[in-house]
Length: 87
Image (cartoon, rainbow, N blue to C red; front, top):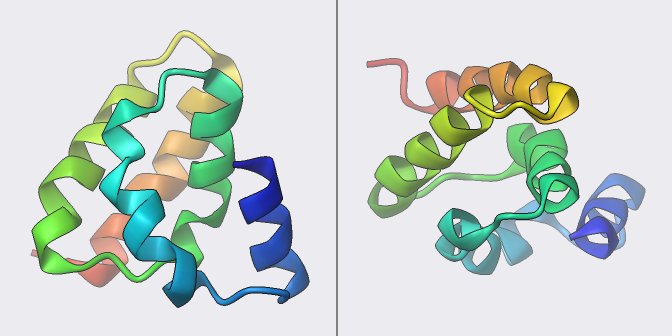
């Protein structure tokens, strides 16, 4: 996930290109660093309607995390989700 995060931030790869695979598997992430990497680029990822529920569950899991950085970045993830789906 760090490589994906780095590639998105460097502009080497577009977020829209990796978003489908990354978001399809987001619920399986258990490693705090991997969760953090996804949260750090979530604002760049287009979230398709069919992934909205799983992504929301992922973000809620992050908000409940005891890992302080995952917990803090979970708010940014919720903001990204709310920006794309204001309802």
